[in-house]
Length: 96
Image (cartoon, rainbow, N blue to C red; front, side, top):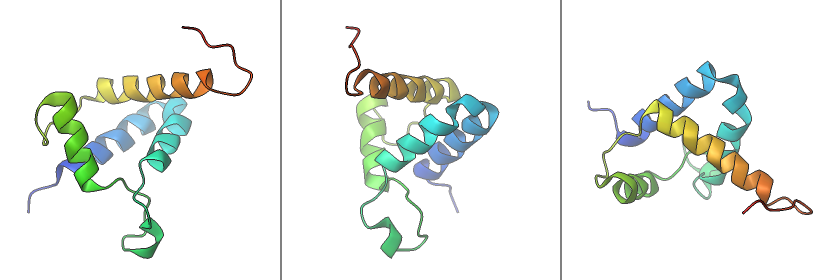
């Protein structure tokens, strides 16, 4: 049984997060942002992103829905998302 692209991306994300404790918060926030609506009503009862969404994101980013981002790319994305979050806090002077 082949492993899905979504599973591989999520496994890589979890692995990178475990290796880089500074990414715990950013990874949890990213996972929460991308969760499937109504995730708590359907097994496996985990806030996972929709498979169709990840396929679309991989196709728009890499040209193939089955592309697998590198560990470095995942770390860079999480750090970028955290910087964007910090820059949009109320009262924060934006550095453009």
